[in-house]
Image (tube, rainbow, N blue to C red; front, side):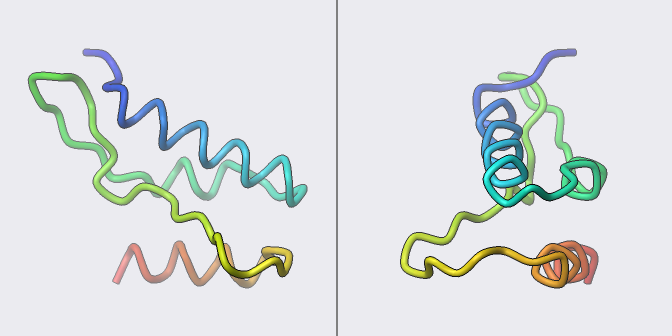
Length: 71
């Protein structure tokens, strides 16, 4: 079993977000929902990136992201 290019991209987005905002990446990675496809594992709930809002992402924002994914 291997990661698809999409899954690698999702991991890179999560890493970038955690480094830029000095946040723990573990909660994001633990909540990834993976599906096995012919191209490898795919993340069905990849992290989102804000383009229009320059405000810093807080721990509450991350908690809300995790909660909304589990709903």
